[in-house]
Picture 1 (cartoon, rainbow, N blue to C red):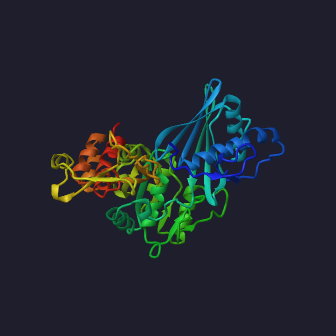
Picture 2 (cartoon, rainbow, N blue to C red):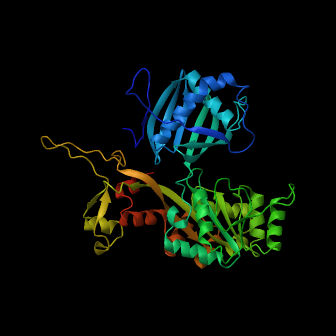
Picture 3 (cartoon, one colour):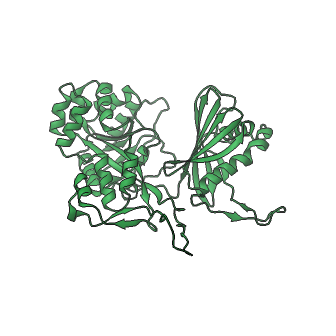
Length: 438
């Protein structure tokens, strides 16, 4: 299976019919000075073309992530397409090492360092489309694990609608931040889409009405009508920057990801003078809230200033061309909490019949490569600060108590938002079950 690969034929002296993919162009590291390729000419000869072929092939297969794992005398590749793993190419150990080292060099990392994790990035172009290639290096007992994340900047969602934030949630975010005070946090584990969700939350705020400052470099993310607030002094700390924003009437501050107790406390101590939107690493909304209580160290401050915690979970979208409609079973709908008249049809990915008629051929879908799914969207959960939840938090809260209060307050969970996508024909019940199987 080729996962939607697009190939370009090029003339070859040995085989005129050989298919070859177009190679990606590396345009320099995301940060820092261009690497000295002449000084590393041997590494360039050994690793550059294989690295270009590897990433180009992965992109042509619609992969967003590629992992190269050293295993004895070989390096084993694994692709992820729409969050699903597929086997990748296998390389001799020396070639795998050369690929890893050249990508470290091109992304501005230290090729001599083998014992510590490193992260860098490369500006690239493939088929006239700009890409941001993130390189993650993780030391293992067998060598260095290489993780490559490929971000198509042309297809990156920007608006809340493109990101998939439903209208009622957009209205809620807008109304909460309209107070020009308080804290809205977007949480999730790494590579879960939390940065995209945070940008979407900022875009929900009316930038024509409110002065929105961005307190950090968002890289290739562009947010219309949001002003980058420049530090006057290189020595300015986070709290000093916040105070300066407040002095020039900053009403909403989009801050850097909050990773320390100090930064979290600074935000909550200053939450009476402006509103904050920030990214915050947490497994989910409930564990994020419990962690927040510990980090802030003041339940009253959290209850007074937290608007809520927003999280997301990615799920595959059915292929629009080949998805199949079917009448839902009323008993199934009842188990899902849906009314029989509420849903006239559900959708699933098509599957070939067990036996084709004589002379009949199964036509492969050219859009999704017969995977049945193409692309992903997000389900959202918003843990909102309510009077009932405040009472729970003031009495030694547990995860179960918070979840019970969320249910009592009719907060939409990830599973419920996933059912919305099923009802709208965007995804299938089978895919929803797969995502929540754990």
